[in-house]
Length: 151
Image (cartoon, rainbow, N blue to C red; front, side, top):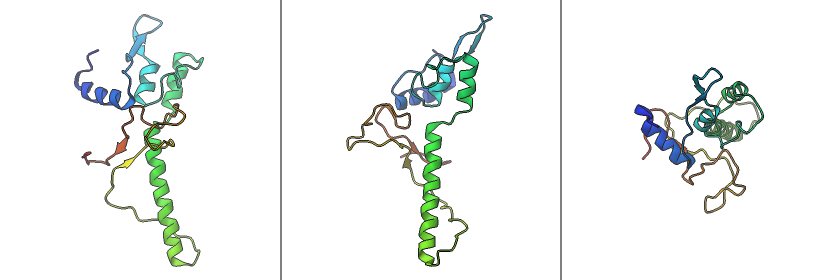
């Protein structure tokens, strides 16, 4: 398939997920191409069949995917929230008062951090082999922050 200007991005995502990208469309009821749920599932980084193996019509699968969360984004959001919580707890501990602290200051610089939430073995492998949160290629998924580039 010719992905045009998206070829490099599609290739990178295939490397991260360790599998080829499914065809973006499938024949619709009227013979015209329609969006394929397997393509959306793939773009979201979900395991094959996570939604598409459910006994749902195509439109319900797309609705479920559209209402879903991209696991890597969720992992990043949780890591930021946990960081803020740690800052709040640390600030509260320093005051020794036990009183409520309004908010932890946001750091202006961000460092790359792993977005893998699944527990892993020392060799980096996934113990249950079925977590949608970890990268199947074995390479860590990282976020470098807006406007930053990975080293």
